Image 1 (cartoon, one colour):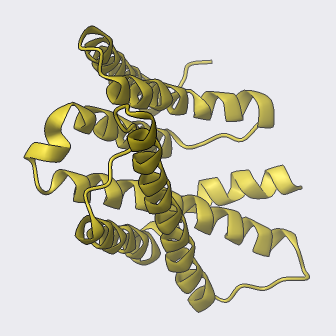
Image 2 (cartoon, rainbow, N blue to C red; image 1 turned 180 degrees about the vertical axis):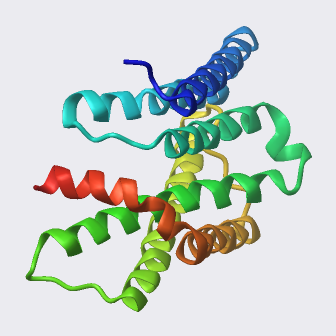
Length: 204
């Protein structure tokens, strides 16, 4: 049975992005840049996550969502080689995209639980608020991790793997996390029916 053209194209694009991350990893190794190497290795691991979920949990992500996840980690990895410092808008872009992914997963999991259990009921308005609060909560957690990573790196005298540029940068990060969540709440929920079904099937 032949695979759909869309699925084949998505796999090809995802493979190309994975190779791009591998190139950045090579650059990090060649320049002895620990932060680039660590972030590239973690990004490569994330690109294989959809395949692991499909193999071990029978949880199938759509080709579009797989591409978005791969694109998010690619942009972050490329940013580590200098784009975060030289392009003022680059950090805003990566935070918005990453927050949209977090919001999408949070919405799909909650919606699937709503369908699965008769003991809970989540009205649409509640789901919209939940998406925002869930995304912001994880955004705050990420900012705390960046802060702790900077302190730990400074203590042992090594380069920080996660970089925090100050309070203003933290506030802006949370603002664009909010933008990503709002975009999903306004325009993305209808496109997440496949992920909701996958979570629901897994619960069943």
